[in-house]
Image 1: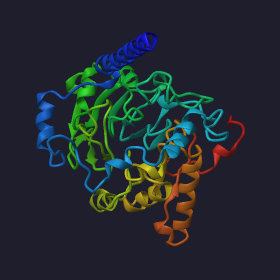
Image 2: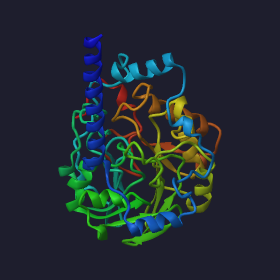
Image 3: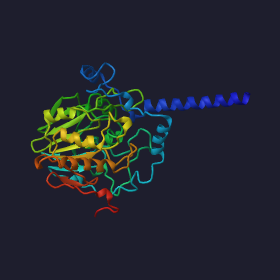
Image 4: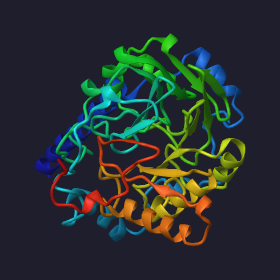
Length: 382
């Protein structure tokens, strides 16, 4: 009995020590970000979408869909899928193109994987959700897939505008923000997210934060922050205390929509009516699952979102770089392509929507863009 009691004391001590280490890590490591200052909190409290404790979606979004539902066996299968992915679920090597971002011209785009897109219009270079490292606060977890040519921050030109959709780790990269800071003109972020950037050393004068439907003008380009159906948070206790959303970029020579993350909702049609008719739409297409259907779209819904916002061309994003769900890595692009093909059979030529399928790192324009199935190839292109 004494030995058992001693063992239990040691075990309890170890568990308490582990809990203390976790608390210290969450509270002290900079990757978790900062807390809003008085000015930011005043803006947050004035938002009609903030209930005093949390930001709310425009349509009912069950909190349970954010958590993993199902019986124990179902949860175990989900965990097993990440710990030991089935053969063929993830690529051994993603065949990408060597990045030539410093040579980017007006009207050109480069997908850098997941939700990171670099593009240029009216002599202004813009990037969305720049992520270049692992998508997790825990080192060596949710690492990017191996690539034949890995994009790096050193390869990027000076960036006039950085657009952030929300503060999840696969969209807001602490290390990347610090490395990019010296070559960025200005960061545009949702309410509450400014605190993270200030905590990481970005000057307050270089960061502006916005509520839904607020907008600004930079370099003669209109930037409109718009809703999405999602959630936020970088720590254990701060879910939905910063805002999330999507962006419209309306320039004299180009009109772009960036969906950020989110489940399907009628808001896409509202956005289409209000500011729609986009030359290009970067639409979330990946990391979906029935368990979180309210906060991530299935590919068929992603296609419909592009239709709703009245996009001429859809660039599917949020796939091809990280393993964030149970589906096979190329399933999102294959399914959205099938959905758009079906849609295009039922409409006139003027209503058809084209799908851009560039490799990661490939430069392309609006008039000529890749539409091939490069993910089926065994070898990379020269």
